[in-house]
Image 1 (spheres, helix red, strand yellow):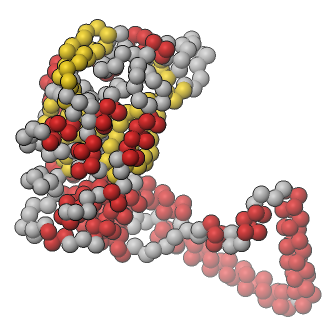
Image 2 (cartoon, rainbow, N blue to C red; image 1 turned 60 degrees about the horizontal axis):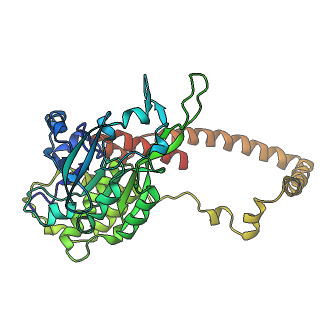
Image 3 (cartoon, rainbow, N blue to C red; image 1 turned 90 degrees about the horizontal axis):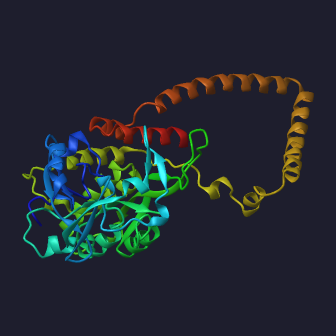
Length: 408
């Protein structure tokens, strides 16, 4: 394993504006090797400029990445963000969306103004056939205007040996001629040991441009989709590599608010011998964070909401949910009738009924005070939430707290 194996290598293909899909987390930026690719060499200096003050190690590569090594034509469009190896599908040129202060119309922004000849290379070629010093991707993201499927086809070995998480732009409709769609990407990545986790964003276009005052919602046209490597699909031959991969995937999962996924990675890493790592080694900050987090997780009581079966302990009770309201009302009235008869009997006894009323009033007051105190304690941050806040993961802590309060 290379010397940088403990740091997280985040690769983004299509980095024209210097951005990446991996979250910018101030306390962990030194732990990141930031690798950005773009086929248009004219934008690379700007990419470097945008990233020059970040503490991550930066590499900017002038590569057009695809399925195989070849020479082909690259379309540079009126809006360079739409530049692609693919031609635009004319069936979608009328599509538009409102962007802040203007309409973004595909027929205008996707006009090809230049064509350049580019040498395409695959990721497998870069990391298996060259002597590059850049670590292969742990995290891979793509914004390549229709070429995502081909890039993945040319990265099968890299996916298998290294990649833990993927974020890619995918279309639901063929904006570019001949491109693969979201479903094709899910099917392929599933065959490579990845599972779709969630949409990070769904973007809308509208096929017909209407004047202001006649505009409604658009149609879902493309998305940013998150995929994680299946935990059981991680390297099982090299124990140290598996341990590192579990730690990295745990951190990536938590960064993307997938806390249960991260906790399971930590649990499995705990079962491995971490003494492979020398105590003298300088561990990345995310390792220290995960260690503190794991200690707090182990102190958390294992409390769960009731399951469906415990909520509806018999099949008859489960079926009762689908009965018509008249039958439900009859069942409720029957139960109330029994209760009312008991209540009437107690009234006739008199003293016992009065005593029970006094007991009920007293217990109600006690319950109200206990509930109020418990609610205040429940709304305090837990040890896990405090660790997240300490390391700048405030949003993640807020999500945990919100779910804890709602479900608790």
